[in-house]
Image 1: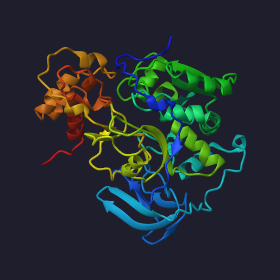
Image 2: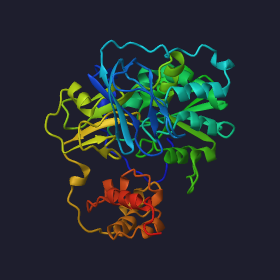
Image 3: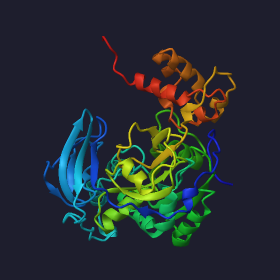
Image 4: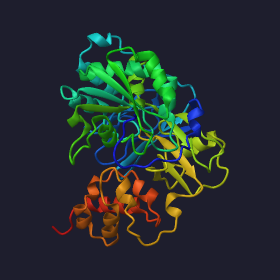
Length: 432
């Protein structure tokens, strides 16, 4: 029997792109490489306009412990260093030579003879984060896990209905991912790794089993195909059989959870010396000419990505950065692919286009909430701008999975209202 968690929803399977091999888009003429996204994740540019840069060259150094080094995705000329408040980007014009920086060199020492701190430093210098998730530097997480984590959990699950990039990575880069996991075991001092896959993705489990199924250091575990199974808290509940309480993290249960895309990035950093300069992401939606799993340079625009796929069949109502359940609507196709971008989804109709009516108190939102919250009450007090009351109903614990909005028969945009409450709770108090 596949493991799972309480709550959540079974979503209709729409992963047609799961059958499509990863393809690389041609490098665009320009890339706007983000070096600052928000206050706690700032980096300082080390290049200036008209500087020539090479692929993999350091172009921005981290300024805070929550930021990572930033590297050029291809060779070319720096045209602009843009800053707008907390957001910054370095614009590079491609020279189409793809010349590699001399700093890109493999790690020569045998992994078994390297100290954990040496391995963490390589991971830090490569700019590896929780790709597609929080953006927290992986090296920092590894250091916190040393001596505390008992199991390395390789998260191969994609519970969002339209995403398939991780699945394709497992199928096409199985050996690389297993070797990346071995590096991480050494870096953390953990003895055993568990690959968690969805039960509906039997091909991924078989590929992993063929390579490491006989090893005492590896285990493959199947989880029920349910949303949001890939979230760290729900993954921990499924594996441990008990949910995390408020304030607890997977590490409190001895689990160090890492996404498969970050494991692959670790492999590339050690074997080829490559920093993170590209992302593998799913691009899809009913507004697109075709769907695909693409390898895209960091800093490429959504417009570049969509043009590669033949453009739109019809003008979309919304273009999401991320999946259909948790993605953020982008105002312009000038938005760029960053390390946290896991998907680009273009839809003819947005989820919030439904007409909403009054709450009928059916309780469906409560039943599906994986965090055991009461979304209807949080939304009600959010409508009334009573932010402290939304806090009383634990708005801050919302993982923003969107299950409540999805099942609401009244069409109420519950997640939108809860996000508004969380934003206002984070604001400093005025007049104090």
